[in-house]
Length: 400
Image (tube, rainbow, N blue to C red):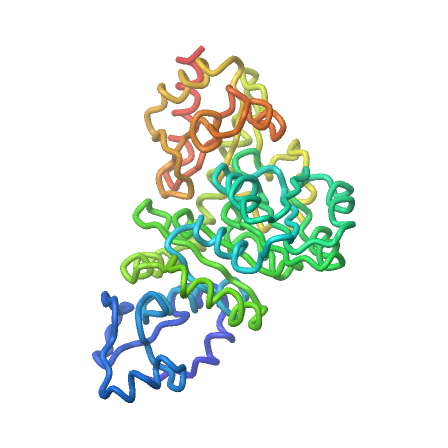
């Protein structure tokens, strides 16, 4: 059966997640085919020449394009509401490629200061080595954005919600201010996923993902993605940089991520309902200094979360009453949760950001974004919410 590709744009999100981008081979397989090949063959030397000149539309080398990888790119683009997508080997390769491909010595980058540790390293240490000026601002403060963007700027980068303190950035406000400054807005949407938040619809130019997280959702594969509606920037700037620097996604991982997309909407519904239940339960305890989740009325940006997100996501961050030893005791006492630096998994995970994901930060830098020695980040999985709550309760009791 041959399907008109234009049908895909008429489908609703759940159908796109299951069927979007599927290209069957001559064998008419049900599941997406896995093309584990590094290269492709040609019928003649002249055909190979034409392929490398771009005179014919065919696969040349899997670093440039691969049928399985392109199915993943198409399906994710349909879900995001983006025109084009380029898959990458990891989430960090997506971040670096999206930023570095369009920046030159003398350019200026403005970024929110609340970033994942590796993103912060790229922005504050790697890019400045190439002559790129970087300014970090409090992403929650619209006036700070306005002041920073009063000067010409080439690029804006931000996470919302941020890792791990769940700070939100007003995407419409920042995008409008950035565009007046001449900047391209790149948003790391990994915590919200394309299910809960659509940065492109809110004014952003580029969205990046670590597909390793919720998109895979089962801790199996690394992957990333860059999405945009700016086809000129994509073809003229991003694609050549990606092609020649080589951060390509493997066909096998693309196949795993395709299967992950099939259930992403269903999983996010459970992730969010479990996270809400855990967050509201923990907020009612009197032995925690702070509990953060965008769905909580006490979250400092709860109103913004209601405006630009469909739900609060799967991450809950808390400060235990005490010091690092107390936080470690809580982590060590958990029996259902696993200690891991990953997130977005079907299994519930817990981590201590100050000694793992943000250990490169100085204590002052961590304090500036609200990370302390007693901070614990929870990635809420798909287990029964009652088991998760009971596990947290017993861990807090034992740690006391």
